[in-house]
Image 1: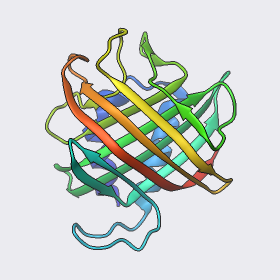
Image 2: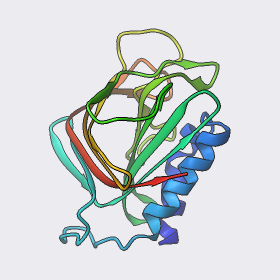
Image 3: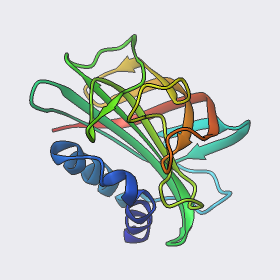
Length: 196
C-alpha cells in the first residue's frame, strides 16, 4: 500500500531527518515491508498475528501494519520496529521503536533511553510517535540530559524470524524536547523479523 508508506514518511519526515545513513536505509526498508502487507480496514480484525499495541495516555492503540528489521552497523547493532495506521494520506498514526546495541540482540534484554548527541543516537532505546497533529512529532529522545523523556524496551523472546517484547515511554514534543505530551504504557510487540 503506497498510501501508507507515503503517509508514514510524510508524518515522520521531521524525525527522519535526524536519522542518518544505515538507520535511514533500515527505516525505509522496514516501512516498505510494513506497507506491502495487507492491512485490514479500520475497526475490522486483522488476519496477521503480528502487532504493536500500547496505551497512549490511557487510550488503547493497536497496529497490525507492522515490520521489524535488524542489521549490523559500524560498531553497533540496530533494530527498527514500526507500526502504522492510516485511513488516507492525511490521517493516521505511526510509532517507531529503534534499538541500538554494542552486542547482538538477545531475549531478556532491556534497553533504556537513547541520548541524542549531535543528531546521532547512541546505544539505547528510542521511540517516536506521530498523530498527525504536530509536524515535529513526539519522541523519547532528547538533545540534552533532562528528566522528561523516558523509554524502556524489553525483548522477551527473539528467534531468527520473530521478535516479541514490551515497552513504556514518556514522549515529549519534538518541537522543544521538554513538553511532555504522552505517557506510553502497557506496550507490547510481536513481529516478523528481517535481518540484513
